[in-house]
Length: 290
Image (cartoon, rainbow, N blue to C red; front, side, top):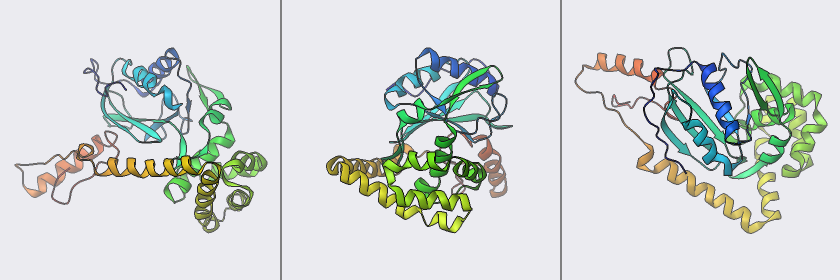
């Protein structure tokens, strides 16, 4: 795995469109097959999300990192890697107005607790081309995009993200059979049909009620298919989560000294937006620390 830090950048910042053009070109040179998972509608000028989400095959992460490091004008200031996603934090390009950094996520699998709900190769194989300005790139098929947009919050987080609700509902209604076919091998017919029909009806309470049956069905099917491997994947997931959350190397604390309480509060409030995309979580400590 390459080192996460890069030499200091020579330019103060790249525009978002310049950064995307440089990164897409570098990924293609490295031979990385990728698609942009969501929030690409404003490309190349505007980033509609808080980060940029790519889906790649796990073994191509070193090449993706090499491509990212080769982009002139940006510098990697942070890196975290979990089972399903590698997050890179960049200085030198703008994520939001008045921002100073950008988060790029390389999703390595689409899973819950390490158990895949969509095969990466299937999503990449069905990806469709999209052109935005001078950029040519791949995006998921409408069915795969709807599933990943819904499951990123519903299955993984246990909540429903309203931002994607209208798009997911439209796709589930227009491509009902295709959605069911995509999810059927991982979950079985009953929980999938219940979710899809609840989504089409817009019944949010019923949709939330699908979370436990979906998780149970996914776990049961993976354990029945291969009990040893299924159990091993789940155990490894919890071990990684424990190490990630409780390792002291994952936490950095900045203590503001030498000012009165009022000035400290103002300084912290000014710093927080600037550091918004420099780490997974940026929050003030109750003891006036950031």
